[in-house]
Length: 92
Image (cartoon, rainbow, N blue to C red; front, side, top):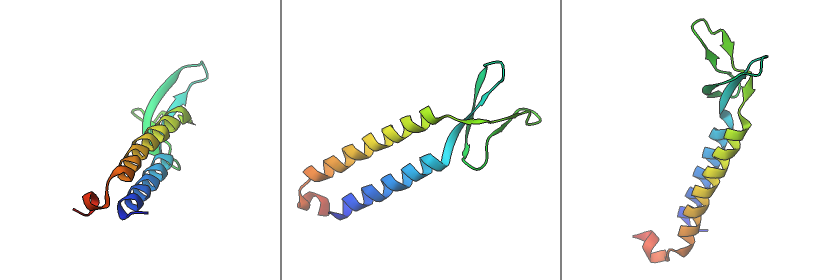
């Protein structure tokens, strides 16, 4: 494995880990309403409102999965491009 491929895999792993730790949060009300509250660390839900009346109560797993798919596609393309590069092109 070439050095550039190792770097791509390391960055991919770091970005996937960050996407799993820094997640999107939402608030589901008892009446069926829903509000997206933003991103925060998994161990610290988002607080929203003037006096933090709303506390995020759900992680938006659909967004997390979409983020992971997008990250994987981008890095798979980058990795595939490095397979086609000749060794001389990489070292320049």
